[in-house]
Image (cartoon, rainbow, N blue to C red):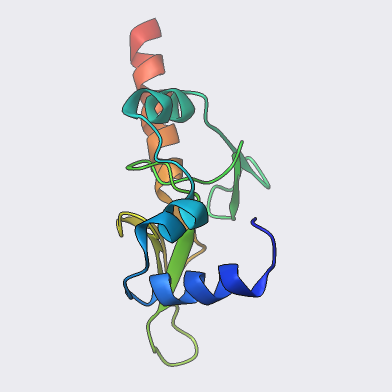
Length: 129
């Protein structure tokens, strides 16, 4: 995470609410945009560790870190839909490109990278057969 200074969090909140902020400040807040080749390399090097390998419905740990597979941004903002208590519906979006990167719908939170990791495993299994 970035330094916990007041300026960072002030503009982080403004930008996650959809407000416009200056371009230079946006670059400072989000960092440089990743190239497509770097994003592909990061997706290929993904490792997803589940807390218990026999139960995939438990929360996963994504290594080396969670990022947006569309632009490479590591910052997200969440939308908590006002649902009555027993139900859960939370969506997480990339702060830079506003693409959906995660969701919890009456289950544990699942990131888009988990699905990409599963696809990579299936493709590598098909190649070996």
